[in-house]
Structures are given as C-alpha cells and as structure tokens.
Image (cartoon, rainbow, N blue to C red):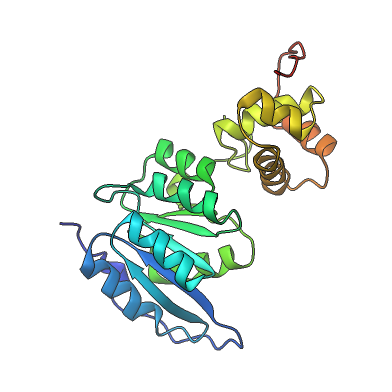
Length: 232
C-alpha cells in the first residue's frame, strides 16, 4: 500500500483563472486518487474530469473526456505507466502527460520522457510545486523533480535530453533529414520531427544548426562520426 505524502494535506488558496485545466488522474491506489481529486478541486482553474486505476481504463477515459493533462503513475498492475503513456501518445500524439510516481529513478524518468511525457514528479512533491508543475505542463513546459534535474555540462545536458534524443542530436549533427532519422532509428518521420522539436525546446534553440552548436557547447557532441547511410 502506497503511503500518502504528508505534503499533500493542506492546499493553499485557489488561484482564479478564466479557463479550466481539465485533468485525468491515473493511479491504482484509490486513496491517492481521491486525495488528489479533492485537493486539486480547490484550484479554480483545475477540473478533474476522470479517474482511472489502470492503463486500459485510462485510455478509454482519455478518448471519452479529452483532458488537457493526464497525471499518470508509473507502477500499476497490468499495463504500467510507461506502456500506458506509449499507447496514449499513439492514440493522441498531442497528449500532455505529467508522470506522478513514487519512483525517483533517473532511468525511469528518462524512459518516461523518451516515451513522450511532458514532466516527471515524485509523490513526495509539495502541493504548491505539483500545482505549479501542472500549470507549467499546460503552458508547454517540462517540469522535472528537483532530485532528478541535471546541471549544464553533465551527461544529458541542461535540457535533460533522453538517450534517444542524444542519438537524434548526433544524427542532426551529421545532416540527416527527419525522414532519414526516422528510417535509421526505426520510427516514423512524425516521431523524428517530435524528437527534433523536443531537442530544440530543451536546449532553447530556434533551429537545428543552433541545437547542434549547443550540443558541442554542452559537451553532448564530441568525437567526429562518419555519416551513416539511411536504410531502405
């Protein structure tokens, strides 16, 4: 049984907003879901439109309610959060998902972000940070739990690039198009374009060449590599 975070006991005063942010809560612990739904209802710009206790239910509810953001746990019986996220992004590539989990593993965070999550928080987050993260995701940001944030110049750069994004950045450096990148790695051109967009956003770059230059600046791109030929 998952413990309830002590920090989620008392919500601050609601912040008025003319537009509601519609939320889908997905967690296999009913007490956790109920607590979140109750707390988030205090925010005048939040509306909980659905609650699910497993991945299959989450996918059905997403189609039925079309929320703005899904708060998704990683560890669930049956279909876990990663697989739920991948299937959700297949059904709705525009879906915005904020992982809210007890796992503070960097590997889990990277797997979630690579699968298409917009943010990753652990369940010991304080309430104000959770609310701020939801609003940040809604506005296009990518909040990450403080413990998992990296500093400039480390292995994944200050933009928190996933291993897949690092691979795509290397192919950008070699001059491949989105279609060629998708062909080389084994996914669609649209997915390749999404990875390139995420790289530019995380590195705060306007175009591909600038992202490559920033990659060298941060130490993400080092030794020269021969250009691979696209597959058939």
